[in-house]
Length: 370
Image (cartoon, rainbow, N blue to C red; front, side, top):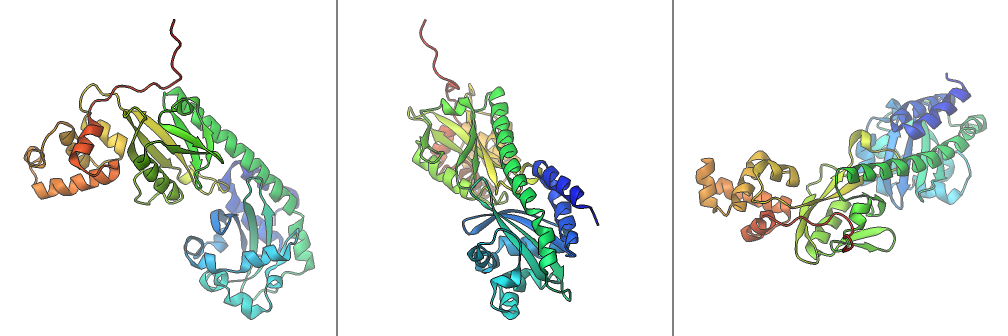
């Protein structure tokens, strides 16, 4: 078993490197003779992010992403007790039968061979809630006072790690936005609620395209583009969702940019983000109809869809595109529907207008006349 000091060191290291949390949860659990542990962040009634040790893994993802997690009473009862430390989870229920009947146990814990739990809730500086839980396997006794005391010794360090993680995360996001500015991309980083976490000066200067709203939110002046943006934001936490993430957004003068909302995945995400996305705006400045390679990158098209879009940009009809590609017109129409969906267009003339050559928009404040 690791020493108290070693586990504390690990907790602070995990604040900077979320990939270390599973090992921290394993060692935290073992310090109280538990099989393992899980750390989660919660906003309102939704779980945002989580990391867990191997013992907690069976069924955890399906439970936390499914409806069963919203039915569980365990967290609301924990909060109602208003304890400033770990508690034995049975204290939040009237008896063991009620505890075992909660969806947390029926849909996850019991199936994973887990039983008694010790749990705490810690308010995070982001306004979210951090929940830490360790579980013993079936057949082991409840957590006693000594077990709870050992776990409580770690609680202040878990709380400070949350504070550090939130601050470091904000600095990383600001640096990412500025890096995009260096390559000329107006960009903002949004969380799963649409709140702007960081923005570079280029996007802040695009006042004819983007409007800034209360509570650190932004919207497009173009109503259609804004609807697509809000739908994409709602799916930030689900990178595999089929919402449109690259779409045109017209400025007040009618000239469009292409907006991309890129959800963070894999190692880019951390425990305390709950999902975020990078909103980048790409000016349309091609001197002629853009080629298939450009359109594939702009709108996340397949190679076949990009060739269809390129044909539309050239003013070709579906029949002419089919002849060029040596496929049926029905195939071209199917691919065209997919292109419409990915570009936020609804008709061929609208798509052609989007893909036609456009003057470059200014990426910064206008220069004063000399």
